[in-house]
Image (cartoon, rainbow, N blue to C red):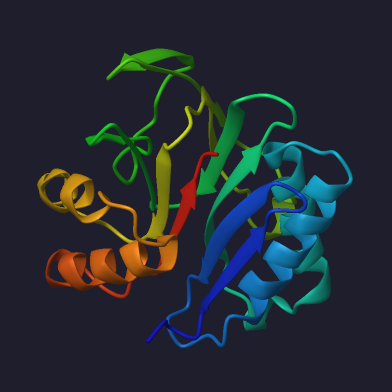
Length: 211
């Protein structure tokens, strides 16, 4: 069962996939739901993920009382139309892994890491990493947005998740579990079953495949 504070966004029409979790474990997920709806609207209007997250963050702060919303962790994937490029952005301790030809590459760093802008070349995947810091409404918290740009190949799988996961567990389970011609839903179900013993807590997952 997914925690109530988690919300998903899957919009192939607008080329955006995301998940968000309220920071308050007792929350009903209203803040994250509002955040993702605002994110979808901004991406649909042509904004990139950084701008979209900032606008969505400001909207949630305007519409919810401070005592009713402790913030959200969020990770989002946006496809760049008519290209093989994708944009990945996240706030908080989030997880993204790319699986290509059975090889697993973790795209997000450990909690608290501060990657410098530059080129990352690992497993033949080139990524451009940047961090946007100190933006947002000063009165009620400033989101720190990490962002990466990359190029997807046909058949690539990109896993988005919330929660900490041991790096060794990723390599032990992802490549093997995601092989085969099964549907994405079935692969995700198998993966959740295998990873559950090593998760630090409830960790919803979202899976996308490059076509």
